[in-house]
Structures are given as C-alpha cells and as structure tokens.
Image 1 (spheres, rainbow, N blue to C red):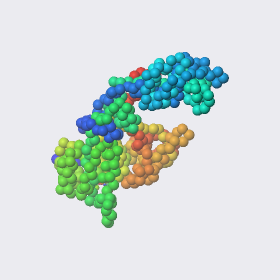
Image 2 (image 1 turned 45 degrees about the vertical axis):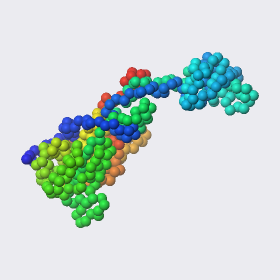
Image 3 (image 1 turned 180 degrees about the horizontal axis):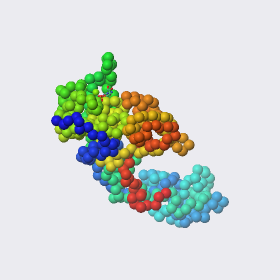
Length: 437
Ligand code: AMP
Ligand code: MG
C-alpha cells in the first residue's frame, strides 16, 4: 500500500499531460450517418461522385450562348427562340444553338452547348404579349458568358477526401457526407465512463434530504459533462464512505466495462477517509495538489487496469476538474487532437481579492460591447456555489500570484461552450493552396 505522504504539487498543465499519457484513441465503429453527429471520424471519407455531379443552372432563367446576349440592353433587347424547357430533375439532349434559348430551372442540368444562364429578371418572363406567345424571349441585359452556371465538381471532386480522419462531425459535415453517399461513417467509439459519487451525506435527486444531508449533484453534472464530451456515462449508485460499499461499486463499474472511473469526494488533503484508503489499497494511485482554485485535491491512477480520476466533492470543483482533466482524456480517446478550449481576452468588470497563491478559474459571463469582450462575475465564487457555474459561459484565468484583480484588468477567458480546435487545424481550401476570397 502506498503512503498518503506521497502527495505532490502539480500545475494544471503537468497534471493534464500526465493524465493524458494513460489514454489512447479507442476502437472505431460504423454508425448510420446522423448518429455520427458530435463524434470523430476514424477513417478518411472520399467522395464517390463529384458535387454537383453535372453542370447546372444556379437560377431560374434561360440557358443561352453567352455570345448571343452580349449586346442586350433595355432599349435594344436580344430576341431568342425558346426551343425547350428543363425542370430540376429533368434533362435535355437538345443543344442551344445561335439564336435559341432553353427555359431552365435552378438545379437543372445545362443543355448541350449552353454556357450561360440569363435570369428571368433580365428577360420579359411574365409579360403576356404576342412575342412571348410566339415562343420568343427578349433579353434586356447583357450577362457575362458563364454567368449563373454551377460547374460540375465545383463543391467536391470525385475521389477527393472530403472529411479526413479525426474530424469532429457537425451539421455541415453531415450534409457534405450525405452528398457523397456516406450512409455509414466510421467513428471512434464512445468511451464508457463509470461515475461514482461518494459521501455519507448524499441522497439521490428523487429524495428529500434529511438532517445533515444534501442531494447528489456531482453524479449528475459529471454524467452530463461526459455525455457532452461524447462519452457514455454509467451513474453508479451513491457510495457510502465504507470500504465495502466502495469496493462493490468499483466492481460494478469494472463489470460494465468502464474505461474510466470518475469519482467525486473523499480525496481532500489531510482527509484520511475511506475513498483514499480504498484507492490506495486497490490501485496505483497518486494524490495531487494541483495549483488551481477551485479544486486543489485531485487523485489519479489505475484501478484493476482502468484509469480513475478522483475529483473533489465540492460541486464547482468537480465540474471544473472534469473540464480540465476529464474532458481532454475523453477527447483523446475519441481521436481528437485539440483538447484546449479556445480563450478570448476580456476586460474584467468586477473586483476579486484572494490570498491563495494558485491559478484561479473564475466563473464569468462574457459580453461583447463596442468591440471588446467584458467578463462579469456570475456571483459568489465559493466552490459550493454551483449556480455560479450555471450562469457562466467561461472561466476567467487569473494567474498565480495575482491576489487582487481590479476592474479593467485584461485576462484570458476559457470559453466553456466553444469547441476545442486542434493546434494545426486548417481548411480544405488552404490545404489545396487555393486562393482565398
Ligand atoms: P469531500 O471532498 O468529500 O470532502 O466533499 C467536499 C464537499 O462537497 C462537502 O461539502 C460535500 O458534502 C460536498 N459534496 C461531496 N460530494 C458531493 C456531491 N456528489 N454532490 C454535492 N455535493 C457534494
Ligand atoms: Mg466526502
């Protein structure tokens, strides 16, 4: 058994890097397209066809030869003979020859030889006069040759990789994948995370707390965070602070196939309680003091081959601890390569004074005014005040040693709802070296 004296002091980055060493991208599975939303691709997906597959009209109008309409003006319109009509989903083999036009709808394939579409707005479309009745159309305005024609493959070329490995699938990826026929998509499996709230004082959400009792918040907030990070949570029943019960819960999690345990409570420094004792007996555990506030005590190690992240019991600390250490691990298991939330620089509007010489993660709501971001406190910053987290959209990072933060101080805010971006993330067009804009 390890000694509880092995408590080490770590920075947030040291703790996170050490934790991440225990996780690798997991196995892949194929899922129906829509179920890939929020997941990460485990293989590159190439286009089976070009998109669009054929040159087509971008407007409702007349397919013409560009050369025929270059002289058109409102006073001297060009008159062309209408030889056919193509709706979207239709086709025509009839070519457009000099002096003729084919009436065409948006999305319909361009007729042979036609190179330009004149929108209805530039014609006499809708005027019930003799010329029109005779199957003739007047063009009132010159449009450049090639106008309103979408080239085959303008969006995607057949055979090109449209979504590389490691891409977070959002609504736009779902749409692009649909156009290239990806009915099934290979994505990383959702990591299975067993969640264990510990404490003799806890009762479940459906119960009314008796004297000295509180409801279990962490078992729910942590499970929600796991879901949001793409994982599959298992909420184990609350574990009382007894060795027997903790052991039994860990066994339940192992049987379920947990790939990560997330516990809350019972890891405080100087608190020789049963969680610590059981973790030390049963696994290779380390107990850290991380130089952060909230959430200084964190345990991490391996129980029967499964990593365990032991978060503090205070509800804000448990959530912030998951955000900084648990979420990156889940992202890495799902093949993501960026695990830092984007930060923005904001101007603090409140006052904070704290003698703790630790980095602080302060709950703020950001607001943009006159082109600058303002960061407002979301209330009392105690680590038990969970509503401060509920009102927050970011965590303002106060560096170690800054004991007084006055209004007007510029500080980074880690945005809690902005997705992590890989350090080397670039766009398809940039990869291809295409000119921008
Ligand atoms: P501990 O880390 O076990 O010493 O707990 C620190 C504080 O967090 C205590 O006030 C606990 O009652 C509270 N706490 C522990 N676990 C939970 C939980 N699951 N939900 C809400 N509060 C908790
Ligand atoms: Mg406790």
